[in-house]
Length: 426
Picture: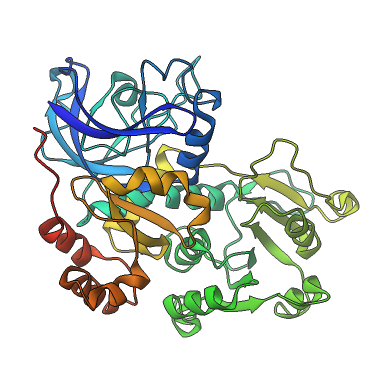
């Protein structure tokens, strides 16, 4: 069986090429990939090559397939796994394998035959034995691809914790009915965090404040998640622009009756935001540093007087576990959440190499890839303009326009039906 995949041979050495996959063993599964979403971690692996902690040293001769946020269907199941999986099932993969002795190994970084930027892959024994192949029953493939970044937010909400004064029992999760502020929260991950706070089945704040310094992003967030809708979910929602504020802490506290917040989430790796977050905490409040810094010497000041006397505490999260991912996939399949709020660009596998290499320079949120089609990486907001000359984009603009400008199941089906198909590689 042949595959078309984007493989990493070294730092900034990405190659889209066809090759033969090995025949699967009894402990492996052959799978098709329909969608993959590009992660900033893909960019980091690309620019670092073999120096990346998850990437093997011999990729110059044994290249890896890039991408770890993918979904497709199973094509052939090795006999040792036929009791659990069947041909035709949709699936997702938890990339955090945590293999004993090889804790950093992960699909999309460390393996020759499995990664998201491919038409077909071989799912190895390690993924199966560690219960990291997850079945999915949703109506669209992209929802499962986006479930991986959503699972990071699920995990962040779960790893925050609270306790009562004088007691030592940690109550895991953001405080139900409490006050929560998300700093720099109007970006793609912030939109998903709002979605989960309003519609998730576990944790729901009573008051949610979203801050940002970009008014268009705040306006878009308010369009997608109106304050009136949040009220119907039992949440008092506020969008706050802190740009130009001499005292942003006082400004944000004013929205909460001049009180601190039970939960503070920091969604950008900026020292000033962490210090701001520390100052915004209420008595026994939890600060969750969600955004991943790029430098190992990243530091910020925290008020340790308040840690001692006010019970302030700090947690950090860098991804979701298998349960978080399975729950994210289930929430999407059940229609509880809308993963498409994170997607701003859509393209085919022939657009992935360039997109990955310049990812930090491309504005917007998640870049979604359909691996079996040819399509330039295109912003959803540009569909209408392109549609003036191209009926393909005109149709996509009309479909997304009926869905608040968001990607949707109907748009996916249109792409899979009408986009130029790549030459058959079976």
